[in-house]
Structure formats: structure tokens, C-alpha cells
Image (cartoon, rainbow, N blue to C red; front, side, top):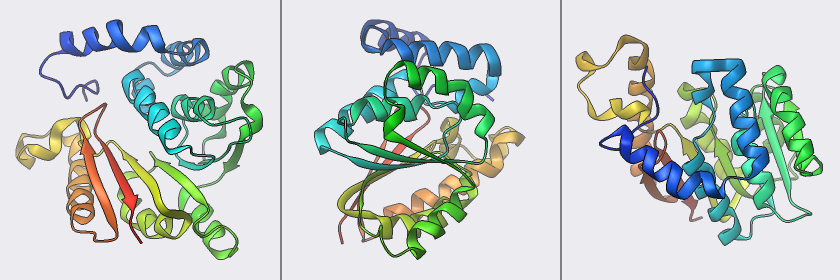
Length: 231
């Protein structure tokens, strides 16, 4: 696998990071990012990159979001980005079956003073979403949802999320360009990427045809698809 680079050159991404992103990166986000690289090495790419974190932060502030849902946390770079963007009374329901990885990032969340905004749910995403839908109290109550969980279930999650996110709210799906492999013939794609490539091609086609949402596929990070619920 490669780094999350969709631009024509690594040098251009380096320029964006160094000139625009790193100067604006919160100190605790920087420390969390570095701690994740130290512990997980290659797999630190599971966190969103700095430019995507800044975009999510800006989007949340523009929306005046107060209640959000995150499926897939890892060490929490996107989670901390969200928590810092929300107002003091904002709330995030953060779902991940890997509590160990979450606890790697937790000291930085605490140091940033935003732990009170986060309700961590130690669960797989599908079970947590079912619980939220079935309790009958949270339909249409979330302003924003960020999905960075198991890729083969994104379409199933979409149906549940459309019940939980309010009309006018945003669902954001991460990794939707999958290292750029969605645009390559399958035989040209490295074997470890092929299953994810096929899943994202199906998802992207599905979202493009879904009349319930307004959609934009953004070529940032590894691909970020923003879906605004219409009805």
C-alpha cells in the first residue's frame, strides 16, 4: 500500500502540509499524530491526514454542528478535530471495537480539555447504529456523521445513518477513492487493495444515484464523500 496521496506529486502534498496545514494544526492534534506514528508506524495512515482534519473542522463550524456521530475512531485524530470544532456543550458519539487504540489518543483528548464532549461506545458500528435507531429517541437528531469503519458495510450504514442524521445534516464517508485504485483496472491494482477498491466502486455508484442526498466526492486525503440529507 502507498501513502494517502491523490495529488500528482508527494512534493505538492508536502507543500500544502508545511505551508497551510501544520501551522494551523492544534498542538494536541500534532502530539496525537506523532504518538500514533510512533506506536503504529505504517498503520498510522488509518487516521485522517492533517488537511482533511482541518476541512472537517471548518465544515463543522460552518454548520454550527452540536451533535455528531463517528464510526471508526482508531487513535482519534478525526475525533479530536471534531471535539475541538464543536461548542462547549457539543456531543460526539464515538464508536469503535478497538478501545486500546482509542486509549492511545485519550491523553491528548484530555489534555485538550474536550473529553467531556465525547461518549465512547466500545462496539462494532452496525450494532451501535441499530441500538440508536431502535431506541426511537435519536432519529433525525445528529447534525453530522463521520464514517471511517469497515468498508464493506458502508452501504448498510448509510441506510441507518439517513434515519439518524437530520434533514440538512451531513454524512461524511472516508477513503472513498481508496488510494486512487477506483480509477484503475482491477488487474492493475495491488492485491491487498482490490477488495476495498471494489467495495468503494459500488458505494460511489450507489451514492451518486441516491436521490435522498446531495453528494460531493472530494479529492482530499484518500477521498472524502460528503452527503447532505435532503429528506
